[in-house]
Length: 401
Image 1 (cartoon, one colour):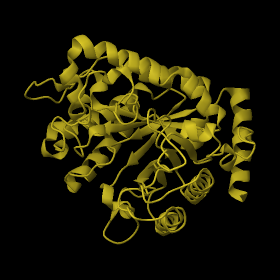
Image 2 (image 1 turned 120 degrees about the vertical axis):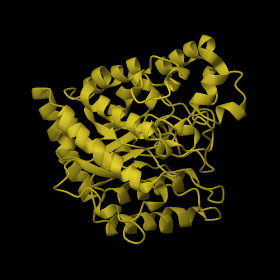
Image 3 (image 1 turned 60 degrees about the vertical axis):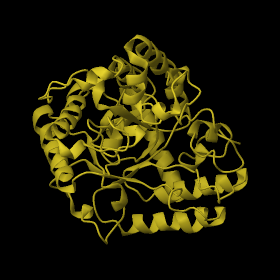
Image 4 (image 1 turned 45 degrees about the vertical axis):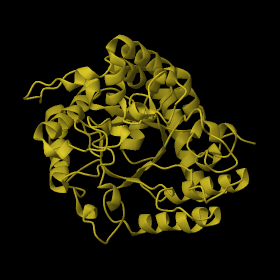
């Protein structure tokens, strides 16, 4: 637990500085003085039905529609109904009290998934389709409120994650595809150029905002051209550094199945330091899919050991675990005791990641049972029930006995 003691002392020192000078923890994270210990605000500005299926947003929306993501849902609802529902959802699903609660639990960062349409314009639209107008307008106001007010007030850093890119980078509901299951992102240059504009926009908008940590340039790309993906990352870096002057953290994501060290991937050598500064590399290590049939004991020990081995072997840019959870396949039956041990094993393993971690996700409502182990998505509930203990990342915490 030596690392956690040192980390806690660092947090105490930073808290003292914050009190005396109104400095923000974001600066310390950006400088590499402390790692990210955070959580995703999943299901808020990019909706996912499984996260909050009982939200009135979904009333009367068939599952065949809601499972396709936000664009399909707004096509079904239309602006007359959908705009008001989304306004209510944005205003109630994540509130100031959530950010205060996150800070009380010694978490220093939120990763915020956003969709490309949040800008409210598209300068890379040669056929003038204006697809952004399909979506409910007004989400940017709520993001501004988080970044410019709440995150400053509670000393929480904000990493903006381009979760849904124009055309969709993976075809899944969380990327809001125009056609569910289809990924068009790299097939049309206008999509790539639009994503670059989204990244540039936020780096410029929040350049002088104390809470702004940076931008994850693209979440979970799968069915894309890798050459075009890497070229986009290079272009985005140059655009942000030269046109906005922002030295914020920029995060690259590999193709989803290339989240490893060594064999079959050259991501370790991509955009190396010191030629590229404040660059992190994102992994999402879920011990769910592909691990069907494994027992709880295997998941919490051998499964976690696989993650540890990958982290230890990595020689590239600083790693951040942008998404992880303690959900498991149905074959892995946990009790509250073993689920707590699993969570502890994962968190202590991730201490070796220089960038840090953000759990997926803060809230998951409507289907979060225990002790069967399938309720491992909601960090808020896991902490409330002391299945996850903030002392693990801040040993001064008194949240759990």
